[in-house]
Length: 96
Image (cartoon, one colour):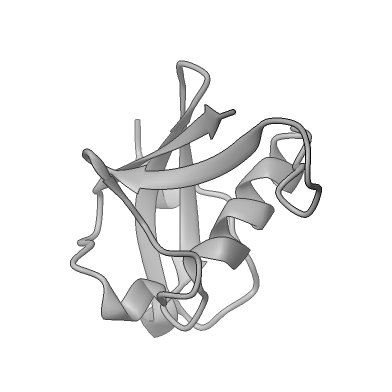
């Protein structure tokens, strides 16, 4: 799959983009994010783009987290502060 040609993302300058694959419920999806975005905003964008329910702002229900390998990424950390590289894979997981 050609990542840059098929990736979904916000309107940001090319030099600000980080292209990644995001796996959600067994489906691998190409995205790009602004390096100034937090991982919380990235997660919100992915779930909204894929039409999935986001209940992170509620006290009950499944919570969503975004992971790189086995590491759960902090919602307040920015993409540019992380060790991610172009083409890496992130995973969205649902926890109770």
